[in-house]
Image (cartoon, rainbow, N blue to C red; front, side):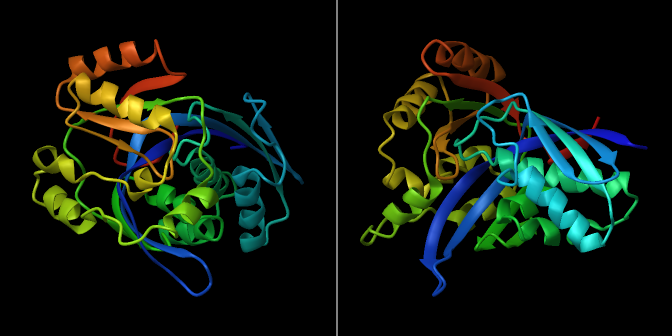
Length: 288
C-alpha cells in the first residue's frame, strides 16, 4: 500500500476551565473534549524522501509551520525510517475556531504513516508522538469523549455521549489562543465551570439533563461579538445549551430535536460564514 486516505475530525470542549499556571508559563486546564462529525480529508502518499504538503485552502501554510508537516517529521525521527510523504489536506474544519483542525490533521498523518510504513505502533505510542506537537494532537489519536487535565496531556476516556444533535457556527473573526490565555491571566476571582460535575453527569447517563453544566471560561474574556450573537440565535432556536469551543471563535449548540437543529443551521447560514449540523462521534480518525 502506497497511498491511504483518512478523515480527521474536529472537536469541541464541552467544558473548558483554566485552573492555574505552571512556573514554566504553561496553563493548567480541566476540560471535557468531544470528537464531532466534521472532518478534514487527508490523502497521504508514501515517497522515497522529503515531506510535501498541499492544501485546497490557500490560507493554510504548506511548510514546516503546518502541524501535518511536524507530525510527519516526528514520525520519521521517532521510527528512524528513511522515507517521505506527500500529504494533501482537503479542509472542512474552519481555522481559528477552537475546533482543533490543525491538530487533528497531525493525528491523521501519524495514523496514516503508521499504516503505510507498517510500523505497528500502538495508540499510546502514537499519542505520545502527537503530544510532542500539541495536547490536542494526542487527544485526536484517542478521540471520542475524554476528561482532559494538566496542560492537556492527561487524557482519560469517559463514557460516550448519548445520541445528540449539534450545530457548529462561526463568524468571520478568529481568536488568537495566546492572546486569550493572556486575558485569562488578568481575571480576578473568576467563575469556573464545574467540569467534574459534567463528567459525573455523563458517567450517570444524564448529559442532556445536565448540559447546562457545559461552560467555557474563555467566554469571560472574548470580545468577539459574533460569539454572543450566535449563542443567542441557537438558544432562540431551541438549543439546550450554546457554548464557545476552545479559545474561540466557534460556538456549538446542543439540541435534543434534530429538526430544530437543522432549522437553526438553515437560519445561521443567512448571517454567519459557517454553520453546520453534526453529531458526536466515538473516534477521531477514520480510514476511507
